[in-house]
Each structure stands twice: as structure tokens, then as C-alpha cells.
Length: 119
Image (tube, rainbow, N blue to C red):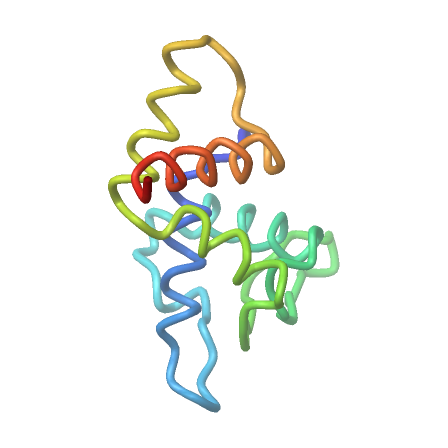
């Protein structure tokens, strides 16, 4: 399964909006999206963008998770892509150039776009 950066951004926004002492769980998403969401939660955990516990079957497939918060790294990434305008323009740059989106390139591109908007 390929990374879907819109899904990643939406998950991070959802986590940031959690109230204190609450968790994001698989049941907070439509059942039709469970596989996709679980995959992306694992990716976010793998790269330390979020703090979470992933519950897996004996076969190693995730069946639930508890996400408690964004890490500093997660906040930094989300801060660079939170703006709908910046996010839309960032995706447009990658599409127009025919380049795959990668974590560091997304941040660099989004920061450049935000800088242009601020000047």
C-alpha cells in the first residue's frame, strides 16, 4: 500500500485536536477505511511522528491502536502543512514536476511556499 499524504495529514490533524487524556482509536474511523488508516498509523509510529500502541493479531496484523499524542517531530511536520492553501500548493508543485512526495521534500516545499506567502 502506498503512502497517502492526505490521509497522513488528516490523521495528524485529528490527533492534534484530541482533548487531554483521550485516545484516537480505530473505531473513530469508518470501517471501510480501517486497513488504510491502520497502515498509515503504523507508518506514523515507525517514524516517531506520534505516540501510540498498536494491537496486533497473532499473525501480526493490526486490529486496533491507541494514539495519545503528536511528538515534537509530528507537530513540526503538521505545522508545515496545516494550512489548506500551503498544502494544496505543495501537492500541486509535486504533481506539476512529476516528483514523488517524500517527508523531507514536503517540509522543504511547504516551508518555501509559506515563506513566499509571508513575503
